[in-house]
Image (cartoon, one colour):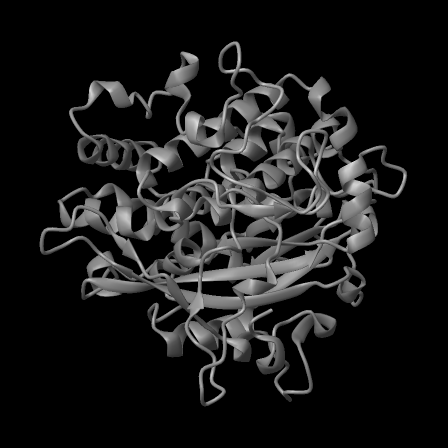
Amino acid sequence: MLTPYTREVNRELPVEGNLRERVVYLLKSYSVFDQVSHNQWDPNRRPRLDADGRPSKTSGQGFGSIEDIHNALHTLVGGQGRDALNRRRTGHMSRVPISAFDPIFWLHHTNIDRLVSIWEGLHANPKDPKAWVTTKVSELGNWTTAPNAEEGLTTPLAPFYKDTNRFWTSDDVRDTVKFGYAYPETKSWTFNNSGEYRKAIHKQLETLYPTGSLATMIAASNAGDPKPEKTLRTRAQKFARVTKIEKPTTAITALSIAKSVSQLDVGSELAKTLPEVEVPKVKVPEDRSLRKLVPENSYLEWLVNIKAVKHTLGGEYLVHIFLGPVPPEETTCLYAVSPNHVGTFSPLGQDTKTSCGKCKSDQASRMEITGQIPLTIALAERYFADELESLSEAHVIEYLQKNLHWEVIDGSGQRLQGHRSSVDGLLVGVVSNKVTLPGDGDEFARYSQDVTVYPEVTTKADESGGRAEGTGVTEDNKYF
């Protein structure tokens, strides 16, 4: 039975390529540890009103986080949804109480530690108290901290002793080198200064994730590298074929096309089960280029922001973001490789039977969490496929109003079509963030700290409320 991890499926339809974009956006644009480290919603992120009652600028940081990436990977590795025989397709990594029994759990958490280390290398600033652990009140306290006491950079991290009489503090552990290890990107001692170290990390990210951001692709293209545009054209060609064919836009259709154009081994067991299709003749425009897409030194990064109660529906629901229709023929276990799929939001919560004390407390308080799915690379692919004219507000808003969809599947793998509001507190909105490309002495792309919110994308056409059973952001709740 097909899953995203069937060998031929995974080779032709990579699972969640958007994760690279999510990771790079977080590492390069988020500059405050309190925001990049966790996904708990903070109502203080809402903009204050000025003297005239108008909202101040809205920070774009805080919806995405490394914890959000962590949760998505748990779900994507463990499996999700139901197959064509209506069987649930989930393994150890999808279920928190048993996830550590899968050996990949330990590699996964090591990689999360690596991402935090890379982020610290990029944004380390000992003079800025917000650049690392931020002082906060510990409402519940613990056996060494009284309830409602403040915890911060110098709070002892009991019971971990630094020496005979002192505990480690957060200020002591800004990097892993003190514990005798580092990652390939974080060998800070090999550089003369922090500037050289930071520049080297940027370079390694561009090498590891050459398609991780539009800014990286543009820089490479401007330097004469043909690979970024070739990659986008290849993806655009695949996308155009699957949308033009007179078949549902599903993973099976995409695989059948791959079989017909000899991208799959026709003798494989998978190929033998795929239906024959007549592949439409599609030619993507030759005059489209990254230089034309971004003619000046800046562009808009487009993102979907998501907020919901973490432990609702047993904490096992998923929110899938699509740019295009979601055919009823698509099995939910193949959503992550569906042609129109962009990204997945996973709460990784718990049900009421959990023995986790923190989870029970969060269930009682109805704790809300957030996630963020970048759309920019997917939009660039559609530009090369002649589906989108540009990344401008006018063109993207019109495109998203027609093509942005989100679907929810519950813990049993069922699609909650018509019932998405059963996810308590679910809100889905679209924002843009200005990115300025390097120039005039700048070595790296600069991401604006502010965003523009577009409630018109997620509001019903008749303005009677939010799209998708009221889960879309409207003018009344556009700041979540």
